[in-house]
Length: 161
Image 1 (cartoon, rainbow, N blue to C red):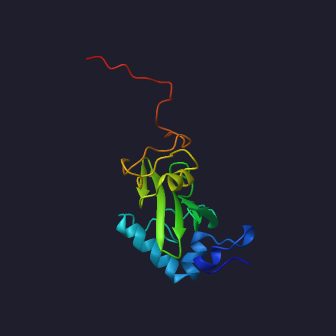
Image 2: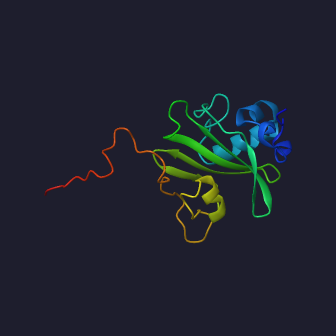
Image 3: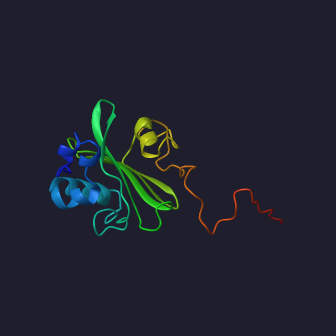
């Protein structure tokens, strides 16, 4: 049986871990936290049953970071997961959301530190904006496929002036 609240999900295992849209329906605190954090970041209506990224999703699974248990998940646009997705970490006790949103360019939600940034990008980006001297927006992970309209990676334009 899947967990019904984010707090309960902190102890879930495999088949008992809820999907983000399940918690949208069953946990009003989770829904409020996600919506308010995304709205504050200028990304209202990004996830949830009627959000822009209402396609495939991963279950919220517990992960230990800095002595705290976070819930990690991913949501993406149906039919466009490689180009339009949101990887996120949610901490129910502190009501905190950290994320990496990609829609042609990468944008951080919150200020993840280096460890959190690495987890959010599966190790592709190792420096988060929460660390001193880093940029607030990171480049897209190298593993994200190029746009189908882009020239091949080895193709170079020679511009003559």
